[in-house]
Every structure is written in structure tokens, then in C-alpha cells.
Amino acid sequence: MKIECTIDGKALSLSVNSNKPLSLILMEDVGIKSINSHCRGNACGNCIVLLNDEATLSCVIPAFRLKDATVKTFDSYQKTRLYRDIERAYKATGNTPCPNCYASKTLIIESILQEMTNSTRTRTFGRNNLSLPGTQNEDNSLNKEAIIQELSLNTCQCMDMAELLQIVEIALTYRRRKRVRRH
Image 1 (spheres, rainbow, N blue to C red):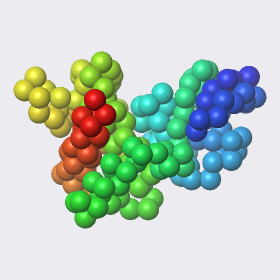
Image 2 (cartoon, rainbow, N blue to C red):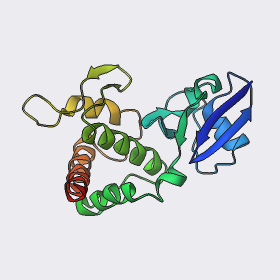
Image 3 (spheres, rainbow, N blue to C red):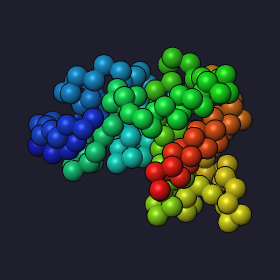
């Protein structure tokens, strides 16, 4: 099957089996070395990519779902200015994910930040499909349940949820400051 998609900013035309998982396409066909896919589809969460700006397990996405999609891996994401917000939040809290899940948790946090700073977007969060408009409650407080659902895409236990929520809140503060300065 021939698939047209964009991976890390490059328009590609790939000839692959329609059921081949995205993680293998990235490793074998595109040559991305940083994809960490050891669970073979058991959803450990260490193979997260941004698929159309949403954190997605690449080991469970078949090739046919890539038609006209945009995929961003940690390799290209870490070269963006957006990455600095999360990096600064890690430093501010003194907590960072372990090397095994660092890339995946960072991409999940980016997906959350994009959702929180783009008020026109609504999507389904996490494995349990918790469908909520954005990630803020009516009183403008963070919807921690929705954020926890999204963060649970990665099963590594190197950090507890309270630490991850704090990182999200701090990174969101940095991100919102940037947006205010631009307007």
C-alpha cells in the first residue's frame, strides 16, 4: 500500500503493508532510531509520537491510519521552542522522567499543553476515552482527571502522578506567558 504522510516535517510517500505498525515504519522505513518499542503492542507507552498533534502509541497504529497524517517524533520535537517549556518545567520541579520514558512522557505533556492552549480543540483523552472539552473545568481550574488519563498512556512508574501534574502546570504557565507576549 502506498501512503502519503508527513513525518518530522518531511512529506513522504511510503510503500508498506497496510497493517504494519507505525513504530516499525518509523524504525525500519524512515530510520528513526529513538523510537523505543519493546512491548510489541502491549501499550507500555514508550513509543509515543504526536499523530496530528495528539499523543499516540505508535506500536498500535496501523499504516493505513497514516494517510495524509502528520507524525512528529521526539527527534524533531526536541528541536522546537515548545520543548523548552517542558524542559524548564522539569528543571523547576527537579523531576525528570527516566531515560526509558523521557521522550514519551515529554510528548504526552506537549499534547496536553496543546489541548490546554488551543481552546477551539476538543478531543478524547486517554485509554478510557474520557471525552472532555479541553482540559479545564468550568471554574477554569485544571481538569486533573483528564490530564491523568492522558499521562497514563505511558505506564513507566519512575514518577508519581502528582509530580507529573506539577510539571504540566508549570509548563502551562510558561506556555501561556509566551502566548500573551505574542498578542
